[in-house]
Image 1: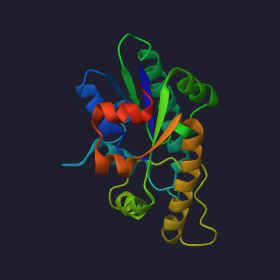
Image 2 (image 1 turned 180 degrees about the vertical axis):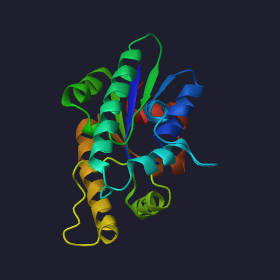
Image 3 (image 1 turned 60 degrees about the vertical axis):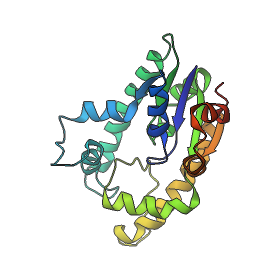
Amino acid sequence: MRVCLIGMSGVGKSYWAKRLAARGWIRHDCDGAIGARLASLVTAGEGEEPVHALGRWMGMPWSDGYAEREARYLALEEDVTREALEASMASGDHVIDATGSVIYLSEPLRSRLCHECRVVYLRTPEARRDAMLARYLDEPKPVVWAGAFDARGERPEEALPRCYTELLAIRDRRYRAMAHVTLDGGELEASDPGIEGFLARAGAR
């Protein structure tokens, strides 16, 4: 069995991937692999998570050089995700813990993921979206905007909440289009169906 978990950062992809790994599944951590390869570009501060250091490196969508760093990040993500998919062809049960920007990878690679894996979208509950924006502002993670940031004459900081909401809506549509099944990340957290229940809901058994 091969499962690919997609969705926004913080919705529970790594949580469920780690629980599957504890049950013997082989986990392919795309965020971790990207962070390891970009480690030479940015050094995490004391007590700082590597992913937040990468967020500093990526910067905000209006930062100088953001477009070039975004393109570099996506090119690396393409390589990492392809390698994870190819590694998952080995025997055993595999879970690909994809990044939030998997929907921006090349069409051939996304098609391969959909063909070879059970793609499960963990959807962010509406009630949690303001908290996601607050967390992004407080501890930025690398976010691929893919042209979705448009200040429309506003100061960038003032435009950010509106643009982030619009980004979530764009991504929600694209995640749904890519996934075989959509599960509510908040409901899973609240009810905790266990690994077997999670796999049953995902249609992975």
